[in-house]
Length: 359
Ligand code: NAD
Ligand code: IPM
Ligand code: MN
Image 1: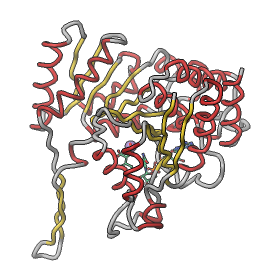
Image 2 (image 1 turned 135 degrees about the vertical axis):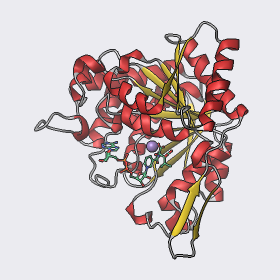
Image 3 (image 1 turned 180 degrees about the vertical axis):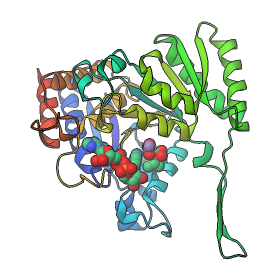
Image 4 (image 1 turned 90 degrees about the vertical axis):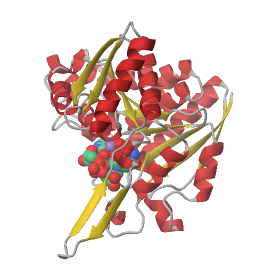
């Protein structure tokens, strides 16, 4: 197959982990006789430095024309000034919105051989296999916002959360479809005891599930309780659907089930156009430039890219199997190594995945 893939390495550890995922994709292309055309573009802080814009027009145009996009991470202390005109993260948000990527899939499935890497007890984590659907183009992230001075010299700021019926329906429908192909259980997370927006989520999702997915076991859980259930009985959940900010927070919490943010990939999809694939972690400024970041989340994001945007299931599964094998062999970057154990570098981990794929 012929496919064009845009790489947005971004900032911090972004370029380090993207380089390893690119090698894996190039290996897949050679092994399965595909033509992948790679183009690398600026996004995030590096784009602010070079062009004064976190999502330059050329990067956006390239993304729109691609079959799929692989992103490292954006952001970092250099661009954190609260008074700055723009921020790296604004580029990512604009990209999601421009491409209408309203559904963010974040699988949380701890590897069996990694159960001891979790800060939670083995018996709690065992058997966990959750697929989060985080709504990605609405809610507080995209609502009206503002900041103004008050007469007493203090300030007031606001962000508003709003969702339309259609925005809720489309992501709930995708989540329900995914649940039908899995263990047929859907959990919708909201804060309907307080928020009007959540009450609309509750009504709309219940209607969709009743009318279109009657076979699903469907439940609603309040977000504060979910934060607790996620670490007390994670294996009780299958597909979880929720709004943008709740999903952002719950999936970082979920990353602690496998033991590290460095293991969790994500896929942002929704429209017929290109999907965006990225690790759920950020630019990790504390370890950037040291060559010790875990590239597996980005490599697994590349597998999701092959599966969801290019329909290459065999190749995607081969990458996942290779990652499994590498972890089973005991290879560990620092974030997942036992205390005092030897850890390998980002490049060595990437190399091990390539070797496992080649067998
Ligand atoms: P972070 O995810 O970058 O890091 C949190 C912790 O996890 C750090 O201790 C880091 O070292 C560790 N970590 C993250 N990824 C790792 C990996 N692959 N291997 C090993 N350890 C890893 O979150 P943060 O520090 O809160 O944010 C840093 C910057 O990243 C901020 O500017 C934030 O806005 C941005 N960010 C970007 C994205 C994205 O581009 N999609 C996502 C989250 C945060
Ligand atoms: C993520 C990140 C982003 C988000 C930031 C960097 C805008 O935390 O992808 O989870 O909040 O969506
Ligand atoms: Mn996040």
